[in-house]
Length: 176
Image (cartoon, rainbow, N blue to C red; front, side, top):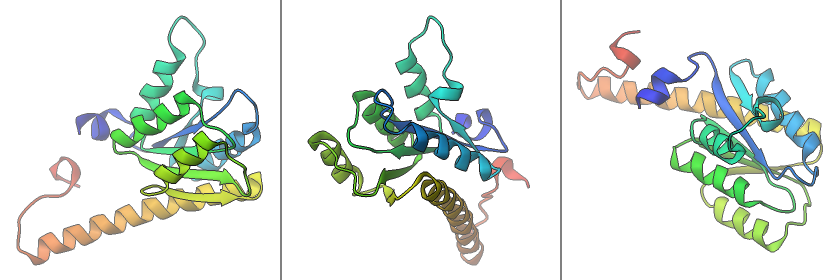
């Protein structure tokens, strides 16, 4: 809990962008996702094209570590899924990040990607997009919706505590 509250940027939520990259099939979608995330004003994208650093280190470890310590993971799922993309998703899921999946409408996924999607769709927010402009708006809507929803759920929790006469202090750090 200390890392989640105290070691992360206190003014922005980090959103890890995950997808298959090698084929270039989703390059425009990844750029649109990063732009959408930045446009919210309170989310910062982490994506390899901007945040990956060349050098003598393991890019896989860097991606998994950043997926694991992000507040959200947006997975853009095209026709195939790679092992590292699957592992990024699982790292974020295990860390309790909010998971969101988008895929191009009408995309023909291979058997592995279809099986992954069918399993992930059981407990993950997902949607499809028709263009990069549509993807941008859908990502903005999903991030804003979730942020508003979490705030309102927190408000309800505080109300329940107040109504039940429990004196628990639910503010971060004990004071506002």
